Image 1 (cartoon, rainbow, N blue to C red):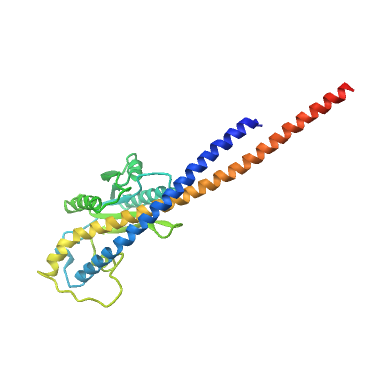
Image 2 (cartoon, one colour):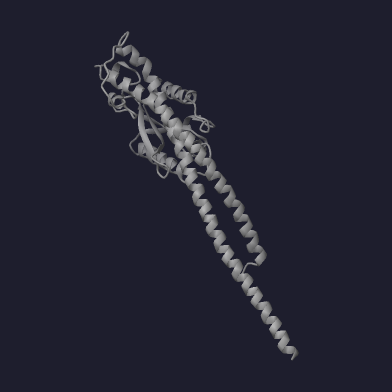
Length: 294
C-alpha cells in the first residue's frame, strides 16, 4: 500500500495538472468564439461568390472549354488534408487521418494512385511516415488562418492539376457542426463540375433571384473566377477545421479536468483510509503498551 506521503504527492501533482487543463479549456473556449466569428464573417462572401458561380454555370457554358472543369480519366487522385498544427484536441486529428487513410487505400484498390497535400502539422507529420506521396505541405498556418495561405495551397494544387500530374482533387476537413460534434467531411474540388457550382456549400443567399449581365461575356468571367472558387473552398475548409479544433480541444480539456477531479477524490479517500489505519495502529500500540505495564 502506498505511504501517506506518496498519496499526498500524487494529489498535489494531479491538482497542478487539473489547473493546466482547466486553463487550456478556458483558452480554447475564447479561441472558439473568435474562430466562429471568422466563419460567420466569411460566410456572406462565400454565399455571394457561390451564387454568382451558380448563375454562370447555368448560363449554358460548355465545361470542356475550361481546363479546371474538363474531366479526364482518373489515374492519380490528390487529397488535400486539413488538420490542426497543435495537439491536445482529443481524437479530432486522428479521425481526419483515419478517414484520409481509408480513402487513399480505397483509391489503390480501384487501381488509382493516391497522393496528398497536407495543411497543418499533424496530418503532415503522420503521412511523412506513410507510403503515400505528399506533393505539397503547408504547416504553421492554422493558428492564424489567412486567405493568402489558402491561395498558396490553391495555386499549387491547380498547377498540379493543369500539368496533369493529378487528375482529381478531393478536400477533407473537420466540419464544425456544433461545440460537441465535429465531423470529417470530403468534397471534390477539381475538376469543378457544373453541379458543384450550382450546389456549392453556402450557395446563393435566400431571396429574390437576381438577373446578371456579364461583361465581356460569361465564359471570360468564369475562367477568371474558377481559380478563386477553389481558393474559397480551401479557405472555408481551413476556417471550419480551425473552429472544430478549438471545440474539440475545449471538450478534451473539460473531460481531462473532470478526470483529474475524480482521481483527486479517489486519492483523498485512499489518503483518509490510510491515515485512519495508521492512527488506529498507533492507538493499538499505545493500548497494548499500557496493558503490558499493568
